[in-house]
Image (cartoon, rainbow, N blue to C red; front, side, top):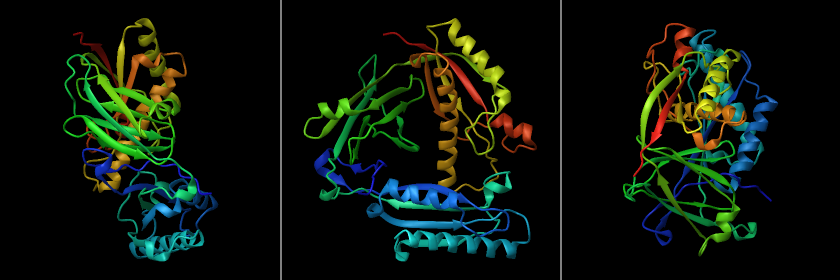
Length: 356
């Protein structure tokens, strides 16, 4: 039986009876060795994993975009990126994906995404998929998740952003103007949702089996109350660094992380928000996929710090986190690696809950 592991969001009207089917997309990259168009075993495994996770029956389109680094001349790189795309296409077809579902382009060295050449030798893969009615032969039960976000103090509804996390998938969305949100999950899988809004403490809820057992008419109801906060102080840690295009911490980050831990242990009543920032020069052209990548990477960097602190004994209740993409870079056009590292930073905001 095929395994379905991704949550597809649907655009809904005022309730489950007015559901409109919506498409979602997942973007990832496979990488190539210098001057090579051979699809590696690691890349094949990555493709196969994504197909099994999404479920082949849900795929509506696959977009392949071939790229190369800046070595060699433009003509060579365009041809190389074209061969990389064609070999990727052939592998998708060996996995049972019809050729009619696949479209492809090659760009040579025209669209770099990193200062590291190895990150530019890639094929960017976009899988467009949807979850409609779950096939009855899979024996899966579909649940609706309905909720509302409100001000903890006043009860007034709040429009805000939220991110859904299931395994390695992050889906960024916004509530409607009245603070309501709707989506469906084809199976009773666990996932977390984090709601964030300027001036409020972020709220995270883990949807799990307990929610599904309490569901009425296959509908899970969530009532999210966000507490207003005041910012007491901003602390910028100058030496918390990440590797390029990664949420992995550099070793030199440890002293500043230890300082942050000491601050939190010294004041058990302190709340902090961890903000992750990334480096992406303003002059670099951004398409919708790069913007999504920026948001997701900054989110993952903030979560890396969050997990680091929790794993060392800091209570979850003292911490919130969110990604800021590249919207607040210190150096919009970094001239060297040090300036780029300064953009890939973490800021910590000391918060105070506003009482009623």
